Length: 453
Ligand code: 5AD
Image (cartoon, rainbow, N blue to C red; front, side, top):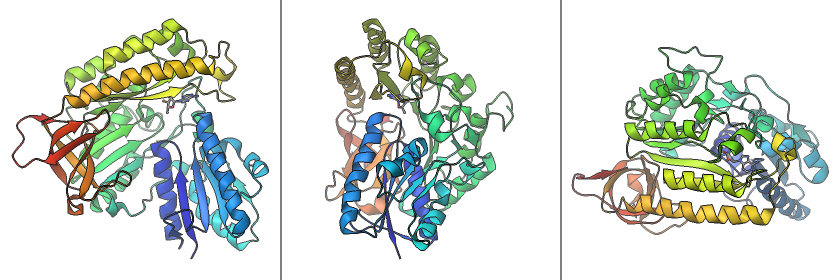
């Protein structure tokens, strides 16, 4: 049977999609290859958020098409966001590519692959919209092997952030029903999953227009309450939220729903109101600040991460200084920092005041250094404390004999000595050493005196 290898670029949703496609292919009788060299079919699951991500996937495919000169039966395909954005253009640009499958057609990949193999190897491009496709991403490859899982709760985004290509690649917002999501979570838990991350491009808009507000709780809060009640589940996370939908009902979930982890990823994008307005982000820095204040009042040790774009068109030194000062004020645990990337077709692409690349690089470096010191400081505070770690297993990279890794409820990565039999367990680990994004520790023998998250 043909062996398939899927290489994934970009976000957690892409990881989730690749996993679901892998599961569907296995159901169809394909097997998964352990490396590209070992594969008969190679699919690149692509990202369009920044130009660099697209260039990486195109460069990679260029190398793979060269491999095809020696192995003419090798099947090559693009799937996901860049496939959606560029469609058949990709077949013109790279004529040795066989499949181009968009974001609403991922569940059709087994059919398309069968058809390609059985009907004379004619290239296939399928980037049409498909009603209900958000319900099709629910298969999991070998869930028992992992104690954590991603669950896709919705697809698409109706916001109009002026820099963002996602509404074009993922389409309009479409939510799954609470019942469907619960069934998936229950099945995962029955297979040994302890932690789920609920995924969507804008989870705070979950269920809008589909599920009515109940007891002044938005649909997303209703979903969280339901997932929190699934027996056997230990931890819930979600990504990504938008400040516009981060209302008091959602803030009140923290500290109230015991399985909801003390960690929030809330993209702010800029610390300047002028830039937020130009980005069409629909909130002010003060609105964002109030959300964080309320969260930190409810849960003082809550971990906080954000996305920031530097070098948005028209960003002055003063705008950038406002972002720097917001970071100083927030002391984030983690900042995902992006250099603005011009995406054609977005409103920002045509805005005046595009910032020269050297200046974008300079601002990026400055803010990166600063936010690294904040992350290091936050992590250093945990040394000698005990944290509850969900053991995920042996690290794939940075492999060391007898070393395991896991995450705390605050999403901090911890390495510690142990054997594979601890996988899936919640273990108390005493932190002995800290780097900006990594903690090291020893399993705690005594009951925790001062706990960390
Ligand atoms: N340029 C740079 N960063 C971007 N992001 C989205 N679009 C762009 C762009 N055009 C970043 C945002 C978003 C994250 C997923 O990617 O910060 O939150």
